[in-house]
Length: 130
Length: 294
Length: 140
Image (tube, rainbow over all chains, first blue to last red; front, top):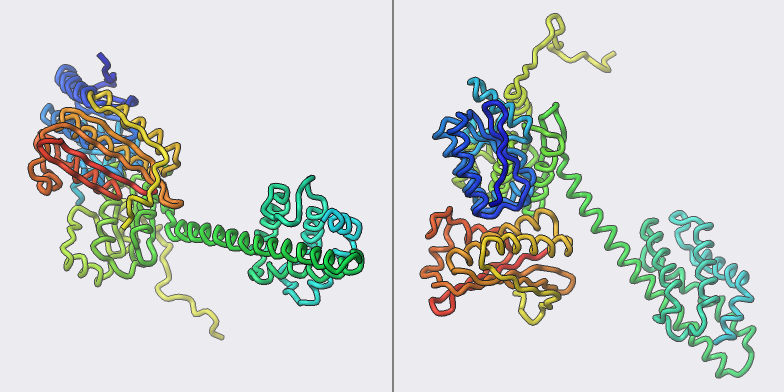
């Protein structure tokens, strides 16, 4: 069965999505991530979607679910590398994914997760403006 | 027919001289295009017409054999558009070939009046066809120029500037219609990726009015930037526009706004962990130096 | 109004929508066509996303069906039309189904309303006898 690999770096989990994401594969990723967060007591999850050509409502919902599940399991999630065309389309579609933290690239995403783990803040972008 | 082309070949230099003299006589604006260039263009046309591929006849300008002439006319029209000549000036260039041609035919093809008339008729129609072609090419070239300029205008109207490492600004000037708003959104998001900027300031000081549609576009841009991991700060909302926004019931609660671009910049610096301080003992003068007073 | 008679279909293809893998295939075929026809990257992304939403609807609510993809030309203007048909139970209240957030399958309910915003034209027909047909068009 096809699976998206999950990398562990310290207490962080790193996922790079490079294949065309079909629904079951996305759901499997959600399952796997939930298990790994609990098993490894991870403090953060980074999902790199720079390789995704589209994010439709299903994929968007899965990302939101992963972030929500991770939060319940006491881990932060950050989604990085969304392409401009994908972002414009998602907004037009009506999905602004308010519960998801985002960062421009893997480096900034990792920096955010490390700071979040030590209680600092300031790198990722969150929606709750001021 | 064949005789006509042969005659043109044999008298090419004379035709060229007469043609150019005729052009000078009708006083084309010679400041627009140099004599050398006109001469070169005229010579090329004459050479191409008098040496067509076999079985190519003057009676049918649209035939395959005249493709090289049509291409040359296209090239001339492009140069005329670039030099700012008018369409009639451009067509006149070819019409001026008629008198020298007719004169030559009358002198050299002294057979029967019928034949003379036929040759003149063929020549006349051929030159007309060329003039029509160059006029159409002229319009085609000019349309292309206009389309390119419109595109450039759109691009110029959305300049994304880097204020600091990781901080971008996009000062929007003029009315935002749907096309421009789309363009603003695309160039800002593209610049965010290219420069890896975490902060983007959208300054609307130069936007005269904001209606629901424009506000929606701005909101979409800001939301899309956030999805990519960048934070947008909206600055330059004039009091009138603030009133309109509230009046229209547009919700800007989730958006960070500042009244001035400078304030937005300061906020972005602050958020990225930077502060601006003044060096001790280096104060800005309170009054400007009295320049030009004697 | 653009009438049907002026439109010329220059290319056409039918793809099945029976499994999740078909859905991926639909996205890839639409993407290939659009890049061949030189649609901008943003247009490509919007159209492929709409195709993904509507194909999923046909699969999940209609029990599967097919997508007919056609390339249109009206004068110099080009467009792409995607027609999704299923043989499911149909939609009882279309205007309700078109609203943001309406969902029967536990999703976010953005399939129909969202893809309408991503495309230039949107048309929907539904009945319990013949299932649901959604036709969307986007002009270059």
